[in-house]
Length: 338
Image (tube, rainbow, N blue to C red; front, top):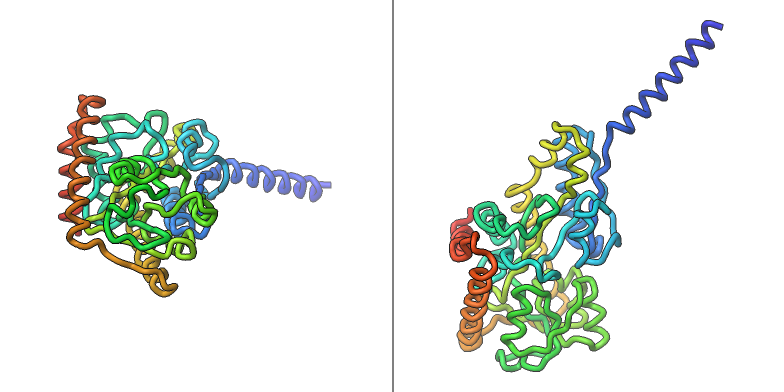
């Protein structure tokens, strides 16, 4: 009888321990929207997940989930607690203006240097705009320089006038307007579809998409603009509700994985993606060219207009943000990056 009682007690204790362990382990659900094979999903965010699990000694587990919302709705996913974290492209929403500091053409950096620079400027200046109110910003980052992907070769900027070009939002859309393109709006995962169906004649995106979105199959002409056509601003967000439910110890541990270290890691992997994408495009037979001096000279005139437009809007909207200082810091950070 005693043995049976002891066995029952031991079984009950084991069950209780199991329940306790389950409760002690928190799963951090991360929402993503790019294809699973994209470097962001196959390398970047799993790396962050491993850092979180290590920092919390396994008390917080990380899990990626897809199709929780469309790309433009990923901010709400974190704000409303649909997921515990997500990533956004600022150009999908007109609420973001300050974050465009890194997007101004002619920056001349890579994804890694641009990511570091936008995080630095955000910490110093751009956070004062409070454009991410309602969520916690884990990291700011940027893709590498955008290039021109088209179905036919372009020999001058005038060749782009009237072409149906998918533009991303943000500064990329301002560039398209200055170039006289017919803007086509679509989130990144839809670009192959709109190109193959004839809805668009080309896109402005970094070169990695020649491989990751298979654009080499539909837009075989790639034109690089020295200094960069523009850059693209992103952020990784965390739900405040998720942070609130963590212990003080685990909250501190999770937040220790954010900021500059995460920004640089994201940028470094995306930069490698550009290298791989360019090599893959060349191997496939895409026609790669760099804009000549005449095209570049024409584009510098557009760059000046885009920059002046951004500074003017910033001065009107955010009296508490020194936009000129932020832009100068972005450029200095890229130039001095080691």
